[in-house]
Length: 246
Ligand code: CAA
Ligand code: NAP
Image 1 (spheres, helix red, strand yellow):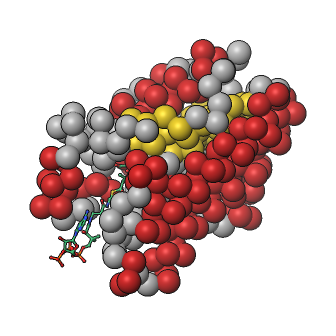
Image 2 (cartoon, protein in one colour; image 1 turned 120 degrees about the horizontal axis):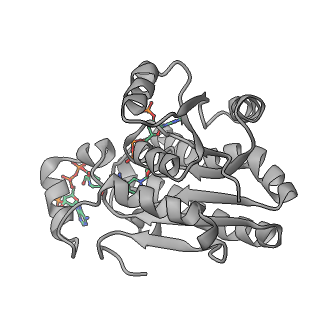
């Protein structure tokens, strides 16, 4: 299979950067999505180039369906057909449900779940038509097991699992696989934003005794994107140091 384009949403964040590098190492032309007018975009691209990764930027707010369409068309016209899509963009707005503002619910559902519809809807039909494609959705251990203080996030990440299984069935005969990765706690800004004592208490419950590394998620994405993983579809792959064994 010739390597075309891989699009990673939220591609300039902690996991996104590692996923972009892992896919670039496999020979894909990688496009890292970021918000429009993202100030550190050029700095991030320059840093990647200095490390030997020639990566492109694709600007769109993934909560905005129209912007996603414009981004996808631009990538297809200027870089090539998208064979691998990693729906990775996400945010947290943690808080106990009774204190949760409606805005925190809406922001998390639209960024973590609606975004998967917004981007995939423009890409999946073309993959199915060509008879090849890989969609990898980044869920979370907290979508699998639920988490205190994360009703919004757990709901969105669990929603991704249902969406993954439904889509996988629709395109399985077309050579397109759709899978979800459910990472545990990985050492990125998102996890470092948790209060230190709360974070330490969580790490103490991880059988592996440590946070995961972004590269460990990147490598799993590269495997799921590869031809070798063609018979894996509709799966939820847990990668959490034993925190939750599904
Ligand atoms: N189970 C049961 N009770 C808990 C609890 C838990 N897991 N965590 C806290 N509590 C209890 C506390 O003991 C406390 O009880 P008392 O009132 O009786 O003392 C009460 O709930 C309130 O706890 P806090 O003082 O911590 O409340 P807060 O309002 O300051 O903070 C919170 C609430 C923001 C949800 C905070 O507990 C928190 O940050 N928790 C971690 C949430 C989390 O795991 N977020 C993951 C972010 S990273 C990510 O999401 C990536 C990924 O996919 C893994
Ligand atoms: P991160 O460093 O905060 O990265 C998230 C990325 O998403 C950022 O680049 C962010 O851009 C981008 N983003 C947010 N809203 C966006 C929007 N509307 N449009 C486009 N991009 C947007 O966090 P991370 O840890 O790498 O998380 C990546 C994914 O993994 C998320 O879906 C997260 O839920 C999931 N996950 C993380 C962990 C973990 O432990 N870290 C565990 C399980 C799952 P800005 O920086 O510009 O906001």
